Image (cartoon, rainbow, N blue to C red; front, top):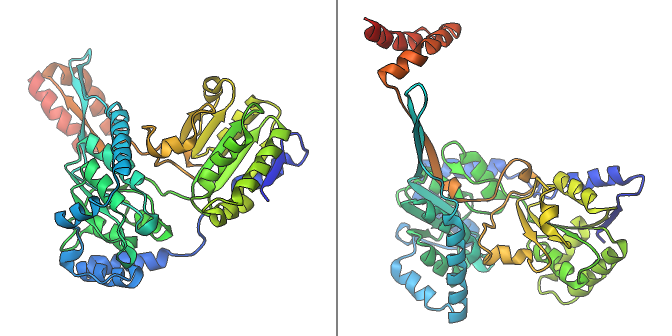
Length: 433
C-alpha cells in the first residue's frame, strides 16, 4: 500500500520527512568494482572492453566489430515499421525546434572605460551518449541526448549501446540516424563509460558523456568526471501530481503509473486538496495494476514508494512540492499557470489535465533527461547548454588600461602576487613614460 498522509494531522511533519528521506537508489556497493573496470580499460584498451562485454553482455566480439557498420545500421533500420519511423521523425523535429530556441547569443560591448568585453559560445569537440541496451532500450533517450548535441554544433557524436546476447533494438539505431549520430558502439556498462572517457585503440575519447544507465554506469560517470564532463548522476524516476477533485481518477492513476512502471525504485506521489478524490485515485491504481503489462514493477514501486498527500489548499501543495523538488510535476488544477508560478523547484512542469507527463517523454519538445532525487533544487534538465562552453573575451586599449590598471596593481599587492602587479605596472610605465 502507498503511504497516505494528511497535512492536518499532528504527526504529518515527521511522516513527510520520512517520505523525503526514503532511499530509493540501488544500495549495492559497486564503486570498487567500477574502479577496477575503469583501471582495466585504461591499461588494456580494446582487450579489456572485449573481455568485459563477453562477461557481462554474453557477447563475443572482436575489435573490428565494436562499432556498428553502415551496412549493419541500414539492415536494422529497414526493419522499423513505417508508423514508428514517422513517430520518431516527428519527435525529433519537435525536440530540435525546442532546443534551437535555447541557443545562446555571443556578446561584445565597449564599457565606459573603453575596454571591450564579451563572451563566445562554442561546442565541445566530441560527446559520448550512453543508451541502455537490449529490449529495454529507449530510442526516445537517443533523441533527447543527441538532438541537443547536434543543435549545439558538436562535430563528433558517439553512442554506446549494449546489445546483451546480441539483441539489437532497430529503433535505437534509427533514432541515432535521424539525430545525426556519427558513431555507434555495441558496448555498455562501466567499460563503455571508461572507453568514452579515456579512449581505446578503437574508441576515440570524448569531452562530455551524457545519458542514463544503471548503478554501474552512474558510478563510472561519477569517477570519470573531471577527465570529461558529465550531465548528471540520475537516480530512479519520479512524478508528483497536484490534482483537485475535478479530475478523472483513472487519468491521474495512469499518470502515476507511467513512472512507476519504469523501475521498482521509482516514486509516484499525488498531492490533492480532496481526500475522497485521493482515495478514488488509489482505487483506480489498484484496478489498473490488475492488467498492466509491467504490473510487477509498477506494483512494487507504488507499494514501497508511492504516496497520497491531502492538503488544505494549493498554496500548501506548492510549498510541499518545493521541498520534494520532483523530477516531473503535473499540475491538474483549474489554473495551472498561476500555481506553477508559486513553485521554484521542479525538473519539468506539465500544465493542466490535458498534458500528461508521457507527452514530455516523447514528443512534447522539452528534454526528458531531468534531475532526480531532489536535485532540481540546484540543477536543470539536459539542454543545448550542456554541450556548449562559454569563453570570456576582454580587450584593453591604452586608455582603458590607464583607467583601471592602478586598481589591479593595488589588488595584486594586497594578495602578495608581485608578478601580477608588475605585469600591469610595466605597461602603465610605458604609457606614462
